Structure formats: structure tokens, C-alpha cells
Picture: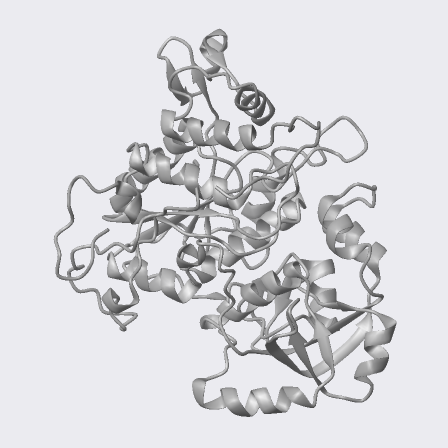
Length: 480
């Protein structure tokens, strides 16, 4: 750990760069680019335990020393000021109360920090319909911003009746504590079938987010302006990695980044991912950028049960930096708080749009982004190439440069991950996520060079934690 006034000990773990943020060390100006100070690191993670766009509609990439503007021109944060808190707390006492699930709270988190800018709260009907039918929102000035995933709050008949004629409601967490006030509200019908069909392209049973969030919720949606009392915290040892768009922008400017390329993932990082990310930086340097910075941005909201939990993924990412697979001096690791829909080409637009608001002007997209297996049939739910194709044409994402994956596989002749060469296909082995999980579950090692040893050890430890006990019951995964 490096603190102000003390030199960094070379023997200290490089993972300290995962936090890469101290409020006191970040200049307040968003436009001045002084020589960046010596990097100061927050406490290290010690948990308990493309060719570029080819669409003719896209402008040529322009090299700029300033960060991309947020959608709508400014970052919309939805926190009440300190001077307003007392009056808001008193106001909330007399308002109908709506309880939030954990996933609802994650969406409050997303909205409050401006990831969905220029949204000012849970969607009213006009925003909901534009999102479902156009994957975009038209602003008052006539411009269009991308918005592909509905961000809505469901209520049931009893809650609707309780609200009555009130124009505001208090939103409380599972402990009954006030989280936010939703004002100038609008209540409208929750057509679940239409929402599901247009978001996922199917109404087949077994869609994880649908079963977890939509099927059992109320038949009404409530939208309005959100006023959040305090920043959302989870108290899970990872809050210091949940940097807001404003904090990330400050960090990128402090580092004098002239390009930010974002990589989203919900899986452990293997050397194929690392090859892709380091090769992307090389290409950006060749394009004329001087200091491109990687935003390694694991998704931290709801994920389906068979995904590796966030705490274990963060521990694995720690080892990737410690082992030098990625350069901590040019990498910012932070947690993206959004829940996961597994809605393929529809959802990947949301993932890309949110990173614009965090300052990223390049977005790396892979095979079948945000996809999953069909819940009924033995096939993928989405075409593996549609995600990157949709991103290259999506309304409101014209400013973002899309960087499709090069295909990486294990090269037996080199003993490492390399870009696939079809002229010698026999030399390559594709290790799928399923194969990787099977190896880890069986405590077997992958080929040398597939993943750094420290990172693989974390993955094996996670699956060991799921081993059936003597009574045959499979325990809940323990925190990393």
C-alpha cells in the first residue's frame, strides 16, 4: 500500500493498483492536464479469504486529448446535497413506502451515479416504450442517446393502492432504511410479455433475469425523478473498487489518458483476454495515441447462479495483476454495478453506452457478448457475431469506437495463448468456458500458458468451496 508521503515499496503487491483511486489525490479540474503525479494506491485487495468500425456511417477516429462527453452532454448524478438531507428525511416520513429488492437497489446505484445518463430516475412510460421499441431515447434538443435495457421499478396492486394520489414515494431497502425519494411519479401497466419478448427476443421459460426479477413482480411500473439520500454501499469489502463514472473520469484525467478502452467481463481473466487487451493498447499507440488506458470492468450486479461470484472474480483479477499478465500502470480495475440480463445484442448496447458515461471512447466486444445458451433448446440463444454487428450500427453509439475481438486460442506450438491462424488450425486448441470450469472443478491444470498460476489457483479454490459436504449437500459459495 502506498500512502501520501511514503514511497512505494517495490516488494509490495502490484494488486494495489486495482483500487487506483484516492479522492485526495485527484485534481478537481476536468479539463486541465498537468503532468500526472506519482500514482498513489489505495489498499490492496485482501478479501476475507478490432479492425475498427467499418460501418460507412461512422466518422473516422479522431485523436483527442480530452475524454468523450457523457450522453446528453453532462453526467447526471442523482444524490441530494448535504444541506437537503434533513428535509428529505422528514419528507419521507409522510410518504408511501416502496420496498426495494437487492436488484432494485443495484439499479438505484446505477441511476444515482450517472451510468444511465441522461436518465433522471426509473423510467416513465415514454422512456420505457422508446427503450423497448427503438433501443434509444430522443432528447428535448432532438438528439438521440442509446438506451436498450429498461430500467424500471415494478409494484403490485396493493402498493399502487397504497400510493393513491401521492405524487412521491419513499424507497426503502430490505431493512426498512430510506434509500431515495421518487418524485413526480407516473404509474403505468407492466406488460411483462412485451418487455420480455422485446428485450430477449424470446419468451421461452428459463431466462435467468426474467425468473429472478420479472415473473414474480407486480403488474405495474412506477417511474419518476430519483433523489438518492446516500451513495449505495454493500459493505462486502469491495466498495472501494466501485468507482463511479465521475471518479473514473477523474482517474483517467489524472493519468493524462488520451484514450480509454473498456473491457467488460463476468468471468475470470485468462491469457487470451490479456493478449487481446495488450494488443488493443499496441494498436492504439500505432494510431497515434500517447497514453491509452485500459478500463478492466467486471460486472458486479446480479449474475446467474453458475457464474463465478464477484468476490472470487476480483480475487482472481488481483492475481492477474500481481503476476504481471496486465500492466497495473496502464490498467484501471473497477466494478460496474449493473445487474446482468443475458440479453445478447440488446444488452451489449447498454454495456457500451454506460462506458461512454465513464469516459471510454473505445469498447472491446467479443464473441456472443452478454449471451447465454438457449434455456430450452441445445444451442446458443443469439448468433455469436450479432453483438458486434449491432454495436457498429446502434443508434446513439456513433461516438464510440467498437473494437471486435480477434479470436485467441491455445497455440500448442508456442505453449501459450495466441491469435488464431486458420492456415494452421491444427495447431490450436479452443478451451471453452465449460471446459475451463470442468478442469477447475476436477482440480486439474489447464495447459501451461492458458492462465497465470495464481489466477488458476483462485478458480480451483472457488470450485473446491462448492464441493459437497459429507451429508451430500452442496454448500453456498463462501466469500473469497
